[in-house]
Length: 258
Image (cartoon, rainbow, N blue to C red):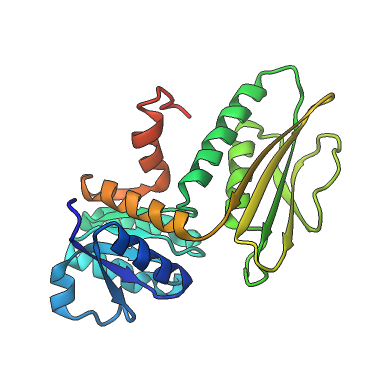
């Protein structure tokens, strides 16, 4: 998609404002949608698609807007995943183009890939690893643990199903302990922290740490734009950020099964 095209931003909070700057710097025309329930027809016609960083309660209106205008929608809003299957069915039935993700920071996506590869390799190793996840966010973050920490846990548990659940506690990282049925996640809230996620792998003799620190919101906005541009060239469907990573990163690197 050539630059200069208009892209609608649904939601004008902290992420919406950062996304506006990123779109402008990339040569696109950001169009701010303050109320997605009543978008003027002229705007609906002029934009090439929509990126939503509003809130879960506003998602139905954003989805209706995208499906009625038959234009791609990237969903960066969180907190609606209990309705994932019905929304997927709605998109498929309308033959829309929608892509969603819990975290659009591409360096965090790289961390997910590295976590998956490490867990797959360790699954059949003699090391008997023990995993721990710790996250720190700003004091304004409402959910705990973060959705990103929970996704890291899902990746680990995919390869280590003996972790039948997660165990969440507020506080510092827990000391190494013997394997049990719960994968430990700890969290802390600290003023001025955009987001820190750390996966620790303990073995009998050594410790491995995979850590990701976000220094701002620009990475999320750039990732959402990259996913939007990819989505625009795809056939109708309900996609996730995993599909984007698989097709643009993993498959060219011969890691299509990661």
